[in-house]
Length: 133
Image (cartoon, rainbow, N blue to C red):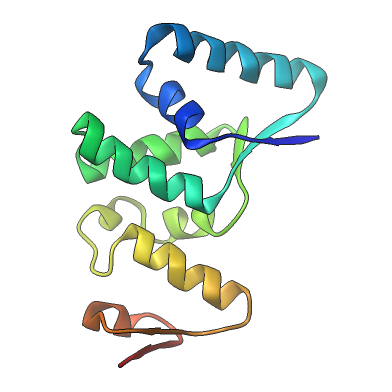
C-alpha cells in the first residue's frame, strides 16, 4: 500500500524541526517499511516543500534541490509524478536554471499527459512543446 506524505511531514523529515514531530515522522516511515508499505510524495508536495525550504527555512535553492534528490535516492520515499525525471535531467544546474525547477515540473507534467504548454515566460520557450504567447 502507498501512503502519500503531506508537505508538513516531508518538511519535518528534512529539517528535523520541531523535533517531536520530526521523530514521529521518522517512526511513521519505519513502521511503513516494516509493514511492506511505501511512502509517496506528489509533485505538488515537492513544489511546496521546495519553496518552503527557501522561504521559511532560508535554505538556498541548490541545497533544497539536493535535499529533495537525497530524499528520493534510497527509494524509501518515492515521487508519484515527474519530479524524479526533472531532478535527474538537470541535477544541480536547476538551482540557477531558467526556467526554474517548478516551471520544469509543470511543463513535464503537461508533456507526460500528452499535451503541451502555453506561457508568457520567455525562458520556458526553450523547453519541448512550449508555446510562448
